[in-house]
Image (cartoon, rainbow, N blue to C red; front, side):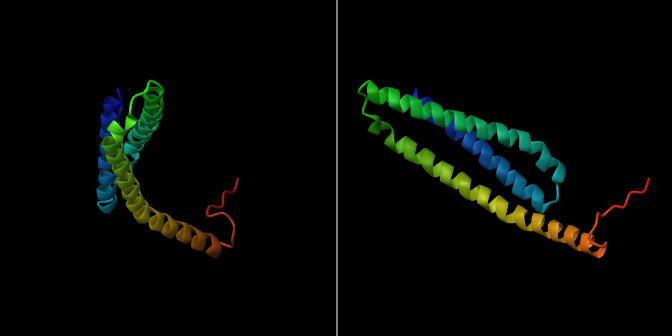
Length: 126
């Protein structure tokens, strides 16, 4: 059971890594529609990873209570942890690309608002 959960988690992590790599490529090519389309899929991957992590923890506890030496899974769990660290780093790389762009747009809007007298960018008159 634990091997199955670990393998499924590794598969979901790989899908998430692929999606983030696709995001990075699409940002570089300004394919914004593809980025938005992939958001729901990435959320699904994240939810699956979280659920599988919980299942893994529960199964490890059950096995320990049954007297199973869970150290037999140490290598697989360590490998899974490495995959999660890589995913975290990859997500950081994506953030390092996206956050400066977000800041640039915020500064542009702030400048436009300031030049418009500090009020709204659009003055609607009824």
